Image (cartoon, rainbow, N blue to C red; front, side, top):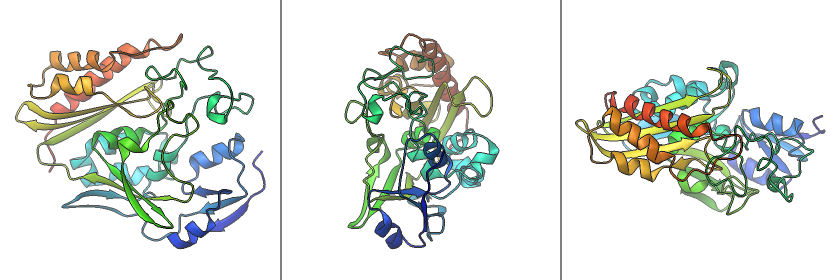
Amino acid sequence: MIPKLVWMDATTLAEAHAALDGSTMIKAGGIDVMDRLKEGLDRPARLLNIRNVAGLDTLRDDDTGLAVGPLVTLARLADQKVVRDRYRAIAEAAALAATPQIRNVATAGGNLLQRPRCWYFRNEQFPCFKKGGAECFAQEGENEYHAIFANDTCAAVHASSLAVALVAFNAAIDLAGPKGTRTVPLEGFFTAASVDVERENALALDEILTAIRVPRASFATASAYVKIAEKESEDWPLAEVAVVLDRQGPVAGRASIVLGSAAHTPLRSKAAEAVLTGKTVTEELAAAAGRAAVEGATPLSGNAYKIPIFETAVKRAILAAAGRKGGT
């Protein structure tokens, strides 16, 4: 049952910051917020609606790159022609998230900041590490959808598909607080469980995500996002991969490969990137990169099946990106 809350509306960032006192929860699209309230994960005194704050729904591409406001819906991000043409993996990640109904409401910022969907974390009856408890119940419990890397502290996987593609594009985010705005590389924004098991990111209590910034893709840049799930629609991914290639003819001059649903944070595979960089992309090379991407995996009792799935997803994403024309 959702507790009784005081509803607040903000129309400016100043109003929003004034309301953030540690007992106020921000609502944008509200998809994850409503789930967390129903599940008893959060018990705020106030709910702050920021949907009416001007400027947070900006979506533009210029000489500096792509700027995405946190209130841009996933549906809009997926449908924008410049995103599909120049930043394809981002459009694909947005298009494959959740259902059409949810994509029409869910926001880019909310997708990045949502909390893990681990069933032990989401259940009030399990006081796990992430909730200040004394154990990770997935370690010895039902863990078929959990992490296969860096899972010795917390086995929950990061919930944001959009983050996987954005990290592959070396995106950064603007975080605005009462003392000003700071820009943080997205790859460094997410918090490993070994650093702080109760957090997923470095957002301060008095900060608001105000922009997502993607460096401008060149004419030689191509990308792809691959999601593998039990059902083609609706399901959370078993494995997801984003690949960005800066190509020099058939050669991968630079490769960025990021795994999602593999660890507590989006996981960049430098080993797989090294396999590709400076080489002509072939099916055999893509398969070798897939094998490199899962080296060092530490699967739990019920999720070793993810290893060959990730190998395949990496291979498919590389070949998809390599087969596409660069940015327009």
